[in-house]
Length: 341
Ligand code: SF4
Image 1 (tube, protein in one colour):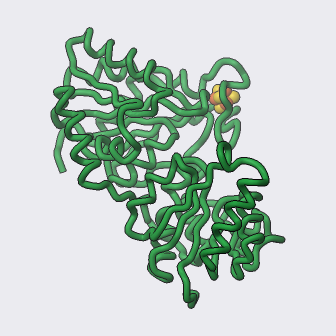
Image 2: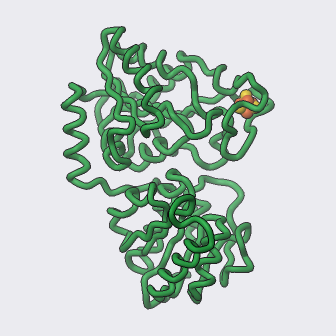
Image 3: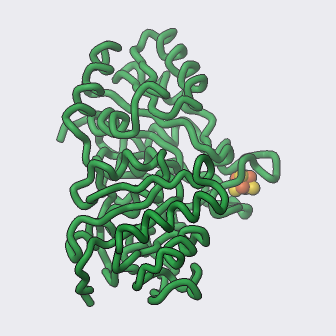
């Protein structure tokens, strides 16, 4: 049932970048009910929501840096108390942010039963199955959506991304590759080979953070040797500028990581390569032209919720068994290299 509240609602999501993007349909649903909402998130994720029309204000909470420890928690609670929120939605199972809303005396604190129920005033059941977007929407009693993440890219973001592409002589159509992941077991090892194969047909842009720059350099160098054109935006573009590059790409090839969700937000056909995790966890792509590449017949798969830093069995067959040909076939199936929408 829609809630009647006087003040702005608060949403707290301090998990990974992808989780913040997957929370945007919940933010939109709550904004439709309460008006633009305030969001507490990490400084890294703040750019993903600070320009969003459903968001009034972003409150950064640097839980692993400047705001770590009890002092940072109390500061956050004081900030929230000063805003006099009437309701806080807590999609993330985070003890510290649940404590912050309790300390801030926010009268309604809405969370999932598998979180910190004792600190909430209203508890919702988190659906076991389905896409994570829909599971999060259950916090607002919204059922059965086909929603996608959303993101507001500014004209400045677009102009900067355009300048980057022009500087590197990249013209459309081009393919974007996102070979990184903070979890090593989720990295498919053959992006260089697929880039070399694609390079005869389209230009390549490798997207990612600065931590992916050396991997990207190997890919762009290999493409250059094969006579193709490639550029790396790793560490050179912000998240929203990267999203703009992905938006302009004909297709994104990615692991189960944040760029997958950026591509979903900007509706770029996506080839998602899953290794130690599986789409059934609820984090897969959901567009009609998207494809998943995975090795279905491996008994050790999936081996953890996030994917371990490296293969606990040492062989990493979940990824090494996926051939360049398999990924290339999936790219072909998106139709992205054959037509322009
Ligand atoms: S244990 Fe299996 S699923 Fe996990 S990383 Fe190794 S090969 Fe992949």
